[in-house]
Amino acid sequence: MKEESTALQVLLYAMHTERLGHHFYIRAAEMTDNESGRNMLYSIASDEEEHLSILQQEFDALKATGHWVTLDKALSDKQPSPPPSLFPEEEARVEEMISKRTSDLDALDIAMDLERRGYELYQKEAEETSDLTAKSVYNYLAKEENKHFTLLQNTRNYLASSGTWLWDDMHPPMLDGA
Image 1 (cartoon, rainbow, N blue to C red):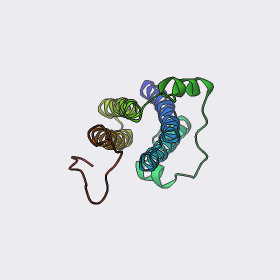
Image 2: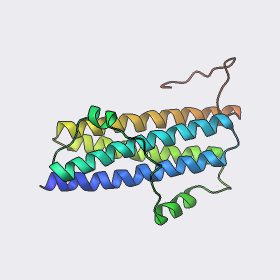
Image 3: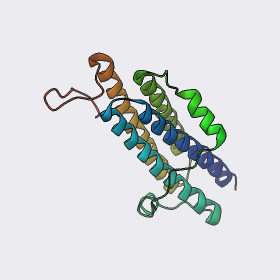
Image 4: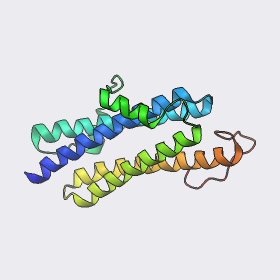
């Protein structure tokens, strides 16, 4: 089936980008001196790992049976796993994206671009698929990428205007979508 073959290719590509994002966030977290920023970046890295798990389950199911598993099943069957392995070309790509000279603002800009591209991929696939289960999975992942983008954008704007990563209880920002 052409749609199944195309879906497998999309899932492979999406797993690659989620793995790349995971490693980018780990690297960015290791590079920032700010504890709040580091915690936020590690949290997003963990989310990317969950997305990778969902995609892997969908890929395995589609390849084995020709059918998608429900999002609820993919979320509930998530097994704790070691961080996704990094291929040499992905490691080089992460090093190309972020270096010791990359500022926190630059890292947030790169992260927002990663999330935007992920959102666009999942949104496009959700619109193009006729499989309702696939549509549900893609819509969920698009929503997750958008949530990350909004958090990163709000954090970036706050960092650029205040010089601090996040806010304290005394001076919470007025952020839309957070």
